[in-house]
Length: 265
Image 1 (cartoon, rainbow, N blue to C red):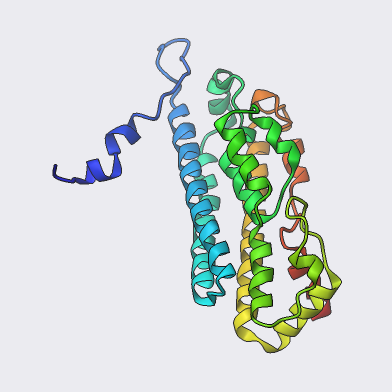
Image 2 (cartoon, rainbow, N blue to C red):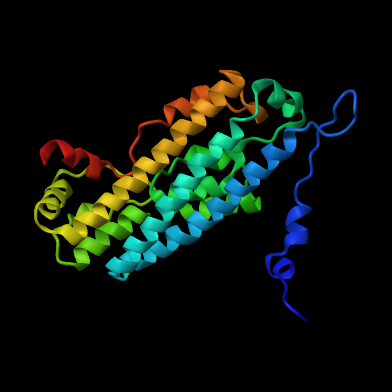
């Protein structure tokens, strides 16, 4: 069989995945902007899949002590994050009235149910057991998130990378409970300060992690503002808290030690 562009990329199947459910009261056709809404969110899920693919590769590269590959992978993840943020500009071309024309048809579906985003959060160290409840226990989605629960994070891989290079990494950092949120370590900060003052290669890797942390925070902020300008502080679809909850996720760093040392440099 000859491989074509369409067959390799599964284009016919891909284009069949956009299935609007709304019905315009007059034309009986789907509301115009629902297609945009579907495509944007499907693209986000593809980017989440790629970020998980890259994030796992990043963790393996760090554990293997491969500085060059870890740096290259982080750079790619940052570029993808920029694209994810810019996609919000496209979504914001949809007015609140346009969204409300089909919002009711979304029924119980909610962005809170995006299991790939929850996996991505867990991979980066933001582990909140409450998010497991957004998908039914026993479902494939719940299983995928739960599988990440006991897995080390990118931060854990980074700590082992530094230890493998002979830096003093506290045992409580190397052996921490990976199901818990990443906590600050004054002793680890001392090592990071040493790196920042005299080890440019490792410092560069630290800064890429800060860029990743800041990029995720930027995406969260843009997402919150997009929700606010679209539905204000109404309850989200599927009974989710909407913008009120999303605001509570802002400005919380993934890698607190890398931010804490700024005041000591």
